[in-house]
Image 1 (cartoon, rainbow, N blue to C red):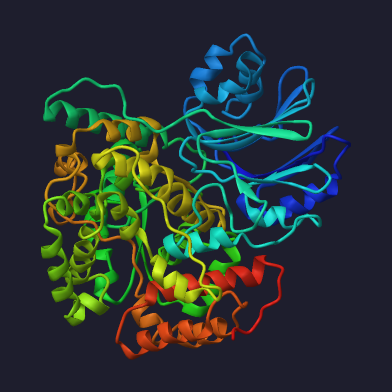
Image 2: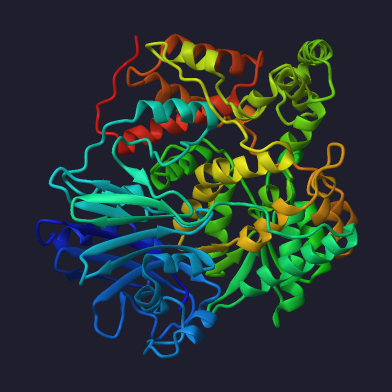
Length: 614
């Protein structure tokens, strides 16, 4: 059974938790698994789950146990190697035909280290009654979320989403101000913080083991390049073709309708091409677009859909923008300022009307070095600082270079600015939404911490590893998971298969970036499978017209919401950003979006009353 769902539970070292509290937690994540659910008490531990049925529909209920009911587990996600695990556990009596029932038996054989054998996306809670041990674990890259906290009486609470923990009466809603400063810098909260003090994420590739009133967190996987010997370019490309193909075909198993989110970029286009070649029925594809051609990718997506005769559906975004923003704020229970959540949320809503599972191209940029910043770092190494500074000033003097973030001149100016910084600081400079000096002006107390995002390895691989450990689990994966599961849609990301990631890290730099072009190996490996206009596209990102929105659609909402500050920020500084933006003197759309989403999050998930800024 592939059991995409929501999980929640309580473990009390001093007594039996109240199952009704877990009922309330389950209700908060019912959208993750609307088909069925239960709360089950096992002495000091109570486990809850909500299931979205995808495969093994008849017998795939949870929780699952071993033969003696001493080990019990609730699970969210999919295991792609469960058939191999079942074969290795053939001496055990395993229920049903799916993946989840193998977990308690694998634990019996290998203890908590069995998690190292799991291939897939997952978050699970396993209770060992004989040892009174709770094991929480999260997949290698963080595709599935898992948060936890300790209550005042020592009870450990955990759930798929933060909003479930906030259903508990003893959970405090004190803001983690350091996490919010990092959010303003990056548009997401990095690391194991959530924005609420005392509530933590289980980090990707880690497990939490709780016994009594103590817990320890152990890392079981670290991203690293596959141990592969040097080979010719053509051999590398053939390995890329085979590995990506296998990752896609593994993710086609489902007893429910399955489709793909098709953006028009090369990553999702490759996924669709492979789906079409290995599916017995036409693939269903979904794309989203805007009337503003700068943000519209429908023509590219349509070219792929036509080539592979998919059942294609386009969604033109003409939604009530303020209303959709409020719906987003209801969904995202941790601060997230990535505006791509807006179209992702809407296309997932549209896709769920027709399918239960959708494949995506998420992860192609991290696995195969697709971000412009990778090429920018290499470029910065050969540009003299004085030349870079002069070039940046010249480009900023043009209208496009100062007020049009998606223009070539604006991006070039940004890269030249960064080229003036020391190499170890360039990544942080490229990622910052509010640089440190702007954050200091914004905070009412002037406090702003330095941002330490330094690659631990040189070259493109170091940047890939940094993104895999920060940007991917902090921003991209929560965005996709929450936007899709809000509509009970399961997303699968073959380009984030462990073997694909490790192969992508192992590729030589010459097959990662060339000039300003990234994903060289992926482009070359699948060039024959893509329409010409798609194969040659550069990286564009999933943008929305924030510049216009904060002058038109969102102007009134932003003025109203951001005027009612909590005393965190200087009101005059927020008004300055709005005035400069609305007058066209600058484009602060991204910054205003981050501030708007932060305040809307605080209204829903922070207990402190709103205060008017001085």
